[in-house]
Image 1 (tube, rainbow over the protein chains, first blue to last red):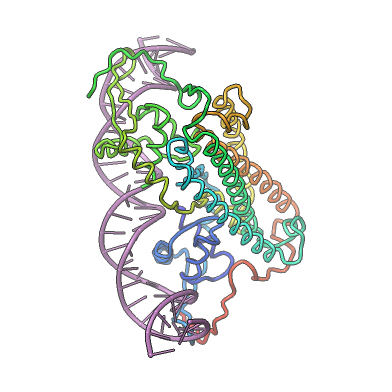
Image 2 (tube, each protein chain N blue to C red):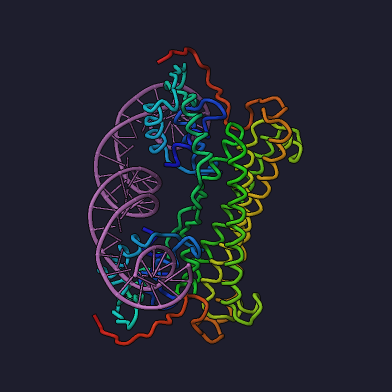
Length: 213
Length: 213
DNA sequence: CTTGAATAGTCATATCCTTGACTATGAAGG
DNA sequence: CCTTCATAGTCAAGGATATGACTATTCAAG
């Protein structure tokens, strides 16, 4: 149940419609959480039922009527409670890592292509995050903004997003270079003896019998 | 359906029991994926039913009987297919980021504590990953190992884990310092005017009527 | 004049993941 | 002797997330 808090946190910076939220939680700008529109509309409905957010209908001339949501006092209290509670650790969970883990046993060509593609995507996100950060701090330098500016929360999460994508890009480029070199040198695998040490803890238990099931 | 491929990838480096897999996918060493024991046992059962892995029973003297699993040819084919298919982008999804996003509106004390705690956890993981990497490359230098070593996949994913945790640590320490300074300076918030630009795209649509729902 | 993108929002289904239990045995520590 | 840890595995239930489709209107480009 963390999406609800992510929604509350996102709504702190002003009223947003479900559609606007959906864009904020989209692939492009999801610097602190990601969710699909369906999830967000459902979560907004739940949050409204529980009185943590309130919506106000806005009839527009040219666009469909929308509802703008804001956090209620109860919502703020809930967010406060959440912020003080223990956080569970987070993990990377990425298709690409699984593929790289299997790099020695699968065709290198498609893998290299994907890693390079990912590097380009990371680069695009880096540019985006840099623009967003510049806009947020206005004319100020970063240090000055972080000392004196109001509402630094979104800036700080965006910094994490930026660093993450920089890490992504650097890693992807390095992997691509390594895989290229290796597939050029010896397409049959490495040259060093393949001992099994280090990867999995070697089973030290005495194995008595092997029965084929 | 990526857990199944993560399991296949993990089993490439030798036979493992469900229990050993569970430890590998645990909080500590999950450098490329994370899953709980229940998931893994269930996934292993599915994979075996579909013939992508095969298990062999091993009766032990002192320990309970276990089943060691290995990837079949069909499993390798499936992994190959997966590796060549497009990867979906990955996202950070972290409680702590949500809390930092709301940093301007919640009590700074608990937040600072949590960020520093996370930095310490990251540091511990960094140490762990460094040890694992050293063990994997044996006596060789990194560049040499990556050029000539066999089975570099696990090494490469571990490198990503290391970089990720370093990024985590650096970011957490920075956040802690910033929040400390700010809460010492002005506990009421920032001093700069709170314009709303830059955070969310300002609604440019002409709002005609506001009807309280 | 029609196609496509953007705005605004919803439904159903299916899979994935987490929480919280529970059974057993053997080894090590106090 | 008793407790705790490590090994090895399983069940049930519910919450979270993803996939795919669907309604409607407006604006801009071809």
